[in-house]
Length: 585
Image 1: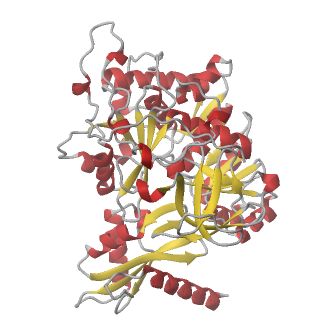
Image 2: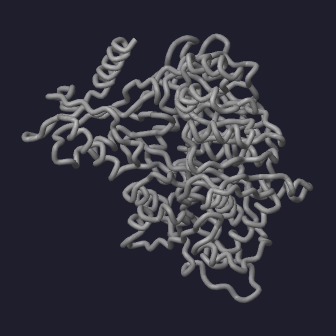
Image 3: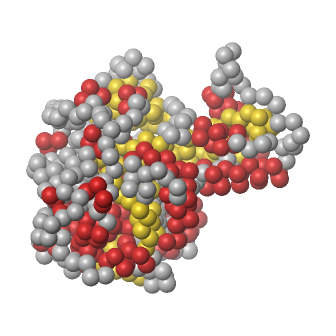
């Protein structure tokens, strides 16, 4: 492991900031630079205090300059260096026809959008912009345009409901939202009646609709502001175990770090590769795998708005994709589709988002001849920090630290555990956790290390082996679901007196949300009520959070002080799943 070189930090003061809106930014005199407007410092002002920052190590290995812009590095550089005619993006328009943009065409789209954001929507450096859309070329161009203009992207899951979107708007003090017209209903509910108004701009397809009108006549040449390597450009939202979202702050340089660490040293893709996958771009797993990694090397990315296993398998065959990013549950589902679709173009398959079972690894190798590349990442760390190149994989192990990162297994006192002894996973590297104005920073960052909430053990050869999550987070088919958030939703239903929500094993999805419900008098725990409870959750929270298993019980296990013992429910869920598997074997 290379010597740790901590980053020099400039002390930050946590003070309340104000959102950037056009009225506050001030008008421009003709011919003046848009960057003469006062920047919005809300995010920078609400970084963790220096004593709560993690140790940032090994930054010197990358040699980034003081000033850089991630979009310029990821897109403009290819045009400047003569690769503008290479295909960057393939997607579909509203009619289902393929849309193909070269790097030169993508740059022109980005520059037009950046001009609209600055000149017509009042974006200033540091201003936050919410993005709501499925994976498509317009979303990618908007994402990179915001960053090029010095703004801060807040990408959201398409399935989020108004209540969840409102929490994000509140947390990040967002004045501007760009939303695909097909997803406007929940966005409009979240924005309606707020004391801090939110401007919502919609689009259809490849930037039609209201956004298309704004783009009409916009210049396709944009001069970015002098962004610094450590300017915030992304807020990645992740659920806390309480259901209250946490916003993780990432810098311009962070988007390049994951490309030059995991992308270069582990994935080892080339400009001839064709990337494809299922994770939404609101997941940083998807952002890296479907945008940053291909663009860093000048490769092609195929974006799918519908990316279920069957859709994914068909698209791999159609577009001759070579690099695949998806979750273990999708790989398991695609095993039955190998004979129906030609997957022979694939050469690298990355798995993350949940633990990869060894049987799935072996089955995929047998069916395709390819070794699944497992990895663990976190929104707090932006992307994968433990993994192994194909020639160093050990089935069942997550891998070893990505070059530039350090990892260890620690006990409750924060001391390293001996090899083979389970403990808490701690990691540090050139990227680390920076929560936006959140006391939970002190939980995630301890003694300079990022403590991920996972239980691991490390073997004598330095490989890390996943054991379990050590908090109340449920990871189901790659989605993070906070058990207490689902509990709170169920308790709002008149039938529910008490409820405990935990993860239950599932062969298809890895884990599912299981609810143990104590009913109020007058209600019967039957199939009709189960469906009603599930629909209740779907109507209030993102649909993937609903309990797929509902058990009606007379009481819940509790401590003497009345606290719910979720560990007892987890044991019960494990036992019930084992019994069911035994009956079906």
